[in-house]
Length: 283
Image 1: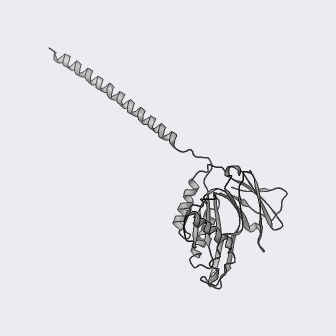
Image 2: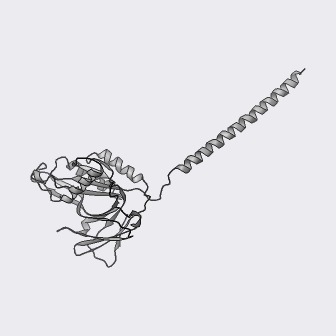
């Protein structure tokens, strides 16, 4: 027969045992949690040190009354993203020229480029203003918030394939661009665009009759070639009449042929001063 004292001692021992068992259980759960955390962490994609970029292509026309808001938006972006890897291009299509005003910056080649995007998107229509970011995100070009969100998302993405390098030499109304670090992009298209930072003119006929239109980064010359494994390529662009290299910049970007997704981009500044060696350009 147990005395009260014996009963108390047994109770204390049982309590101690339960406490030890609870602590052991806590340690086991903590170990499982830490292990699970390590497993999740090891499966997370590795990021690179390079920041993202955004190539913004606007398809527009001075013959389209819906385009001026998109043109103003691109002008705003030229200021807002001046020091960031955001590359703006304004392609003026020619299929609105029949409405009574021939856009002086229009080119059939830009219309054909937009049609290639439509094929890649499996779409049966082309329209203006259309904005396309990094070759795979398209929307109405005047939608400010959608455009800004697309650019910001692109800037946060890593660049797994590496970065392009660029340098330029200007002579005799021609700009020669040297592009390096191309081996990683073999099989893709290399696009080199000469853009005029700002142009403006008065429209006397058509849907925008009586308006003074201002455009940013208008494409004035454009070359595209297939990358075949060389580490460097040299592309020569022509300055339009009555323009200066000081008003231009070159935008270089690598693009998948089928999907039209843009995988790398860089900028090359231009100058009217000819030099014996290429001048370095920012990214």
